[in-house]
Image (cartoon, rainbow over all chains, first blue to last red; front, side, top):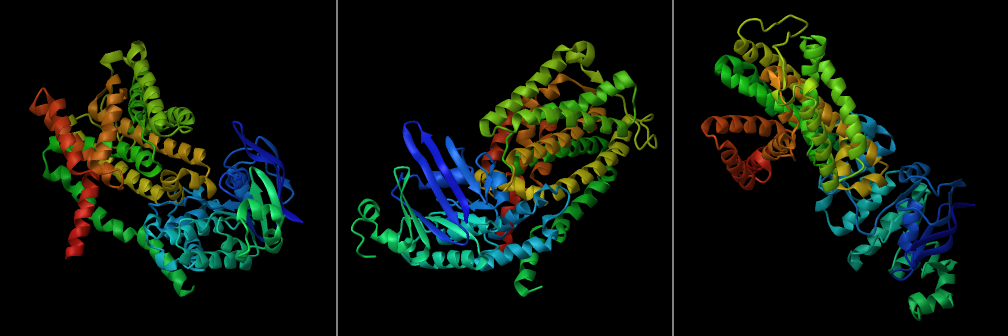
Length: 251
Length: 337
């Protein structure tokens, strides 16, 4: 049974068919990679599913519930969370505050006007635990805007993770970081995802990352799904090899 | 509780530590308590004006400093507070300060809710222009409906009774204003400061700061932006309305001038002068601005020119405001020491 299903999902920007009748699925407890060249429609697809903007047609079902016209807040409540291609943090708050705020919001505690946030020990303890899970506990006091790019990428994922989602969309979690930093980031992210039994859909350009860390790969091209299969199937897929990977013999 | 968990709670407590706040708040509170006994009455009355404006500026800064919304229309809520009091005197013959405050809170909640409903859907310049335009609507109503508002002549407000008649201003008005009314305002000022401090350090306050820092991300951690902005707008307006209600008995008269956008500009200026990035900034800015303006008015007929030049010099030389600069210097001194 699938966790997420899109049916004939459509998004046009003028004459451009950014997402063109896409039927996309994410299964329970899988790490899925979404690949494709720039402009293939990967980020647009994630934006539609996460509610950043509405589709022009089609349907989004999450845990058998139609969330096509649900607000961002409603989708988060349903269990969809995401990180961003360009790191999107509260830069003037500390790393710990970034996570704590997310937990306050998740638990509907941000409605409290007349109680001190610092008095809610359970939230801060959980926030620290999330940072520790992502190896960021040493940076708890630092402003989010002041940590390294790799750490910011991890913190971005940690913020989404703190919402306790069922499905986590990660938009290029290793972009803009050095080659040396990519493996530790992906090791951390995938181990957290797998140990918590949630699903992750990762947009990624680095084919080493894609083939090493994913259970299934969906390849997109010009707004449509080009191929869908296991890493081995995608590696052997002729259309993917010629369109996205080149000769791909290295894999 | 595990060791890391203790560390997390400790970091959180340190951030919003009461001890840290008391270190500077307590001496200031003591000074404010003895002021009427050590300074001339006129100076104490000027300080009362400053404290009242500080309440308004604190409210204003909930929007600017904590939510990232620059309002050019806070004169409207200040004016609503003042005019509600004046109209209660004119039509209901009310003389109790407590009833004035109650009326001003109700009035400013209604007006702020209507204005907020329209304004908080927008940000940046659109928000600023909308708030300004709406405040100008109120100003023109106060200006044109002279049979209700007194037009440019305004409405007089006599000295009110305090604490359900426990203190009345039947004797020397200057003495009453510089002592009984000063302490009345001071208590409300303390209450407002504590309340605002709790609000900005509450989970709600954290959500506002998140909206200020990164609206998109705030939405994607589940913060419903519009609602939080609306509540912040409401609280902000009520604080400023309360300031207007406290101001009018002290001034004895309200005119449409306090609803004009230039008065909104003064609220913006005093907040920026003190430093909108710090909690105490608007308080210090309001008190300093009030003294500067008063002495500039007394010194020359070209007081706007003088005041403008002084304020430009202050803002240019202290870009983080008086409090921001003082904090930076204190941190440098501490590091050096």
